[in-house]
Length: 123
Length: 179
Image (tube, rainbow over all chains, first blue to last red; front, side, top):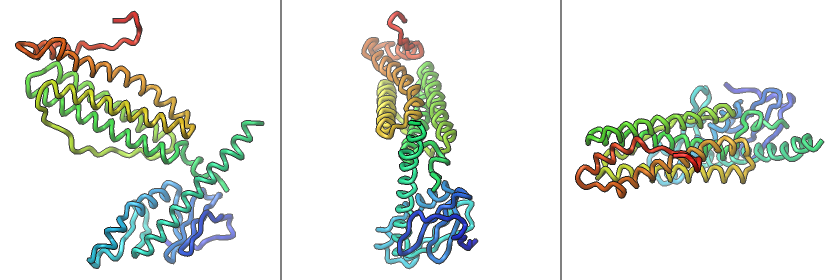
């Protein structure tokens, strides 16, 4: 299901590359991944499941295998009606996007710890 | 921007991955002990078979403890898949030597997780591990004593029968006045 991105609805950019963008919704406690012409909403857990699936794709094997079936990778997730059909360069770009978003989410978590939780404790 | 990671789980991705690996290792131990019990049964070592059945149950209980902890803290506990279990052993002694090796490997694995917890300041998991570290003291003691029976009693004559008889009597008491 393609979701129209309610940019005005409190979405914040987590990480952006030339190929796509990941947004966070604080009102819905979820993430929106904009990539390959569609925007899909993920719960945090699902986002990390998606990242794990994409990370497991063997790029070297895809690149070296002359079979036509290896030109594309279909990325599906259990209990998720969306799927991605991506070429090798797209997968590289997708990996970069998801990895960058993960780092930013972790950085945000560290900042919360250092700036807010520790500060609350100090008071 | 909300901290969605922390809202969802108290565990960091690194600790969650390590705990899931430990779940896998405990399940592997449980299966290995079951294979040892089967070997002992096939070769007429009744008491040792009983000892390994019990050990297998204990390892499964350990696995479930970690499984529940990961789930309770908002993580994703992964159900383990087990293969490549050693089914045949060259001797009665080798069974117990392998069991001791397994316990040492498990202790080392818990030490590694504890080390990571300290570095990441995850004291909640550190405290959770405390029970396992104490348990490993007992597990290693019992496994080591079992191997030592082979030297103390000897395998000649009815030695293996004697060893089998004594295996189930090994007890650990951490108190200096115990025994």
